[in-house]
Length: 628
Image 1: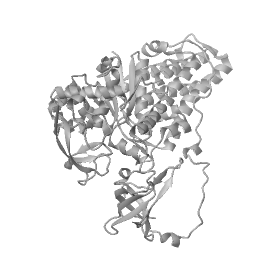
Image 2: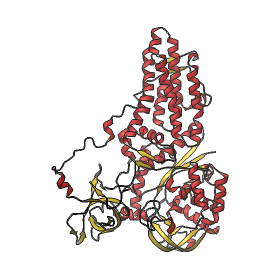
Image 3: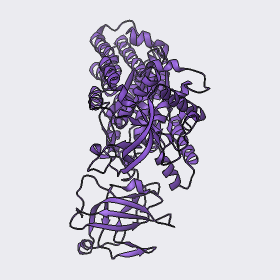
Image 4: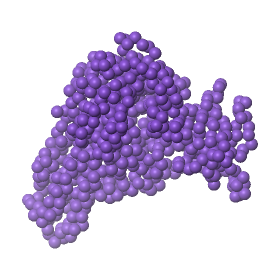
């Protein structure tokens, strides 16, 4: 059976970040692993381009929603091409074929009695495109997922009878205990469903950027809920409800990779939609954690979002792939730091693997003109058994989505090879005429690297190909070397450039050559006159007739109260980006007016390497706290 794996359909409200790259690389790894195992696997990715947040983002940039989504979707596709992601489908929710498929699905669910018209009253988070009940909110006001302010809303809506599928979902989870991985995430989903499912609002009427309802409804006030629209993008490219050649058979073995923040949509809403449509359910939903940067959650508002393209330009694609997969256990949150990446690359990739290849080539060239052949490996039986035992253990780690353990164990065979060189000292054996023993050792190491090249291919495809070129092996030897655990007794090696040159410590910080203009020195008494406090932005408003200014209402705690500050940041932030963000501000500046609007201070900001202005923000600090 052909396997089908999907990334989430990425929301195009901003450029791709390291979290997008992580998920996509995991799916690429999954596909490549299936390929070397002899299984056909197709990979889908794409962009989710509808919703109020997109409409607002486009307006902020003086573009139409389609102009804006074309621009950002291209950036995603271009980046995945640059990263050599082996995708087979790239879906856009603005495609006509997708539009047709979504309308067909809505019609089918309606005919099945699963859609009805009613009224919704609750709190809506624009950032998450999601309604929340009062009991789900934080402090009766803020979104439980992103922390931003929600808006109380009452509107006419079409509903999906999610409650109808509560029992069927629980039966599905119980009958398929490994559907949701890791298992603790499965338990979270079951607990959520056991708490009772309310019917789901699946249309919106407060904005226009979305897929309209099917013509038979004859209701042009409503558009599709963005999550109904986006989830169906897993099947519309396969020909569901449109004129694309039908390949819906692929969905018989579907695997989804998602971040933990969107698990509920994929493990509750999506299977319920599929049940209503009488379509197969996913075989696996893998859920990964978030990436922080130096211990702080990544946030566009804070300005600490990691651009994966920058990381690749700085360190190389294979280094980034290895670090993301090796550094953090799947399902847990991971911390990205340049120092950790450099340390990991130098230790594992340069010192262990790269150095091993260099040692093999150096000795093989010096002693045997790169031509190796041996009769037996008798004195290496213990090492051979150790390598075989490790390789036999690897598959279970991929099956259970533990790629960090897969790499941890795989690297032990390279350690065995390096230790064997030190232990047997082939340069000393050559001095006393043990030429055959040296040949056996180098052929054994060539076998380790050949097996290793095949096994690291899903994670480091370019490195694997270079190693295979060096050793003159290919994928046709997978069954012989891996499945049957055989050894080759002859190699003709080819020199290749060093695989992983050492990364220098100074490139850890991407501002080595940055010219810094320092202000004149001041003394401590002058600094003490500046009162910098931490405050929470509780409201942000556009300024009429200005494309630069925003009005910020900032809460500095009970002792200081709420202050109004006018800031020239409108080109870099929309009002919805700022709500509930902790910022640093000077509060004892003499009040002044901008365009007739009172301003009682100044928020602190800086510019990043691309000239983008970023607010200076903090985490987990009480409002009113003094800075300095």
